Image 1: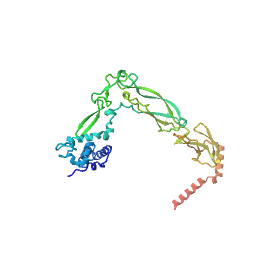
Image 2 (image 1 turned 135 degrees about the vertical axis):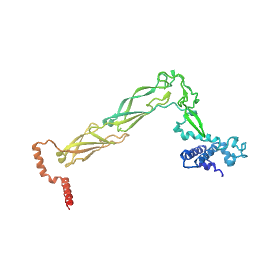
Image 3 (image 1 turned 60 degrees about the vertical axis):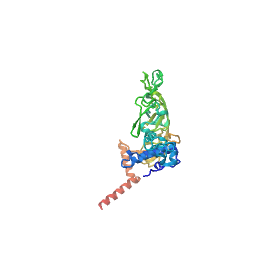
Image 4 (image 1 turned 45 degrees about the horizontal axis):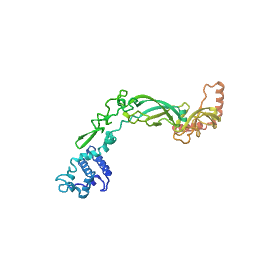
Length: 389
């Protein structure tokens, strides 16, 4: 059976760049890997076919020969560059043989680098370990959320060791190259046609070791200490607001970069106001007579001021009135929200004999003044009549 064209195998055009070839192989390797296609008996064959195609097309000399002669460039008698019988282009192993492991290893880090920790800087060595991010929960009052504030907090964290200047070595001496990984930070092991890369067990991926660890920090390059930080809390914060302070987290190991500090805001419950985004709600009790006759009431505002609100005659419990611009400020600027006054008509208690007498007289005279009551009992009568029918 004739071999498939290598460009067709990877799904690319003949003029594809080296980067496009590599990306195409990465995609095919993920799609065709036998572990992901256990129900497909041809997956292993297709997987190796993609590796064979990539092994040729990634190499400029092999690719040039393939573009000129096709598959014949890697068969006996068509070496083009002096290949021996049975050998590949240039006298080395043909595609699909010993170089397949190398072909897959070239993209191994791209496929699994994040899972394995990735390669670091030059030569694969990792940078010094970054410090952990820290979380600090901060509770503020609603008034503080309204105005914003500058607050000093104490954060238990790790800071760079002064004795070794964060290097982890006694006297601040320079660390030495790790003898196990030769400064790479990783070691490799061949398993079949896979090349497995692991973090070096000697230096933990740093690529360097310390001969005489600092006695103050035991070679960590950092020590535990509480830090006092001044934090600016902007106006308009609400529960769940997160503030990031870059570089204020835990110090990195052996001079590594510090992590970040995340401050999570919790706004305390207020005894007068309830908040919904930038709007405030205030439930105000009013007397039965005030609700019936109407009048003015005075209500507090979150900025410490007072506002007069006119109650219309015949107001019922639950009625809301809006005070525009008397709510909370928006976190990222803009106009303030509104404040809503909700009336709660209060029934009087502990009445005197005279008050009871007046209310009975009022009740007798007010049968026509309660339209909702009249409508309700009319509906009730219709319901009972219907049940009897």
